[in-house]
Image 1: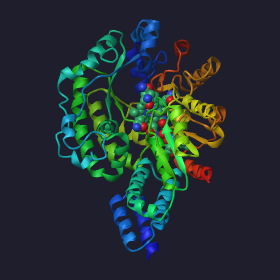
Image 2: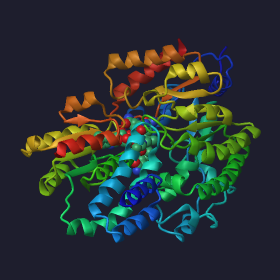
Image 3: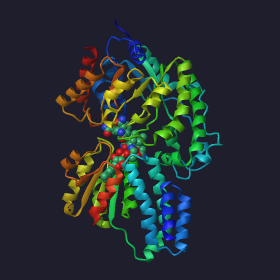
Image 4: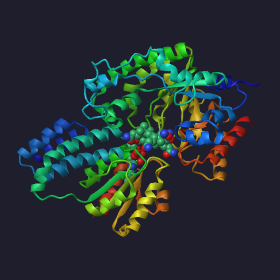
Length: 212
Length: 331
Ligand code: B12
């Protein structure tokens, strides 16, 4: 019985049916399914499938956005139950679009995929200064910083973030991931960041590894 | 044969013979100040390099935002398409005072200035996706494509009514040669939304507008950044005359253009602002520009930047680039 409802949650999430997902999550809780199972086997399982499909060009940005929206609405219901049961996120990541750059759709997709893997994400938004990334990572105890840039005029700021981490003496405690339209693996190597991935789903897989 | 800019561009668009490659550039967006400092004005730069085209901005705005705001705040997740379908949200496109940006220039110089130089003049207006991004916010709009297709279809239909009247004013009263519809659909590797969504929601209304532009004796062009290869056949069906920028580095190969589309529409672009201009050293840039001319010269191509030249491009690099383009265009 519980497997059936978890599958239903996953399927409706994949279709972006937020209202139904919320109803099903409530129903599952009422039936005594654990919040952790609903999260992992229902919400995150569905989001993972959407992530794979996005990576393989089977779905597009809208489908990912509506699935993530459904996931978030369902997760709100679970939050108090997860906290009561002492369930913690599998890791903590800070993300943002670098200073001077307002493009944030890609960054938001990465954030959604990270959350879809059960990570806690601190989203600094767009146009974020290098020191803000590092200071937040230190203050919030994040192991990973994710930087997004869509402009050739702002890619250079990624290097400033790497340098800032060195300056502040925390480079070896942090993994710096980068991405966005003009960014490449060569650029990543050149500026001394840790990894570039071309899409949001792969980014989430790598971040999970880094958080272990 | 020696042609005016207007004749040259028209020949390129219609696939006729022309004397040399026409030239243009999206310049003023980021570097207007620097260009003015060096050459006196952006217009002086355009004259120096004998630009064949002019891009006119500053026409009417299609929404009554005060009416939209009665439904919900702009760009909020609460502003959903179903709340707008029955509201009178569209402005009146028939007030010629709203077109002075096109004639006299607001952000850049106007049609009167450019027609004195016999340039081909195109006027920009936002497309269905771009225009509603301004109301919903692009990310919400992307979601609404998935969640409110019927309501968006109706809103786009109403916008095509507006655009058709806009076309009449811009072409018949102002005298522009081409309507340029700006509607970013592409990300770096693929479309932002699916080709099916495009076919169902964008294509029918866009086609209606393109047909109307043609019925008024003008051309119609589209600007979409990014990879739009999956809808290129649809652009042909739509009857689009010019595509900007055909972003090669976003999976839009020139070979594919030449094989499949160069007898269908012209492209405006070629000088990549994402990987070349302002980014490459002189030698590499020269090789890159020569490569593009080697591929596209003599074809239905108007040499232009793929977007606004970015701030990291020095005035020396810009001059080097345009000196070379000017020379190659005339070889
Ligand atoms: C939408 C868009 C806009 C919107 C942005 C809206 C928003 N809220 O984000 C608006 C209209 C505001 C805009 C403005 C501008 N834009 Co713009 N824009 C685009 C466009 C069409 C799509 C970008 C997008 O959202 N893609 C969809 C997302 C999902 O893709 P993505 O961001 O690439 O993300 C994916 C991956 O890259 C990766 N990823 C992203 N971030 C990260 C981070 C990490 C850590 C990892 C691992 C992975 C990762 O995962 C994502 C999903 O798989 C691109 C075209 C293109 N070729 O990309 C131009 C583009 C980026 N823009 C461009 C330009 C020039 C501008 C402007 C500067 C215009 C100007 N005046 O010149 C302004 C800049 C404003 C500013 N200061 O930021 C140019 C940049 C050229 C250059 N030299 O860099 C482009 C490439 C267009 C072109 N023809 O050249 N733009």
